[in-house]
Image: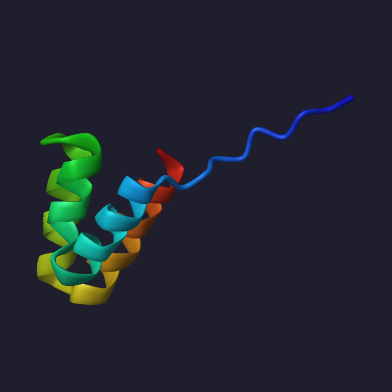
Length: 63
């Protein structure tokens, strides 16, 4: 028997995703703190809002 361990979104993940739509670095900060992913997200957001949102959603969904 195989058990699937797919990540599930918690209610707080939905709050993080909401913040990620407004200001993507805030959502990443709430998920991982200040680290490489946070600074990468700031750079992506400066280069274009949409890449920052996509990266923030990816970070939240995979952690």
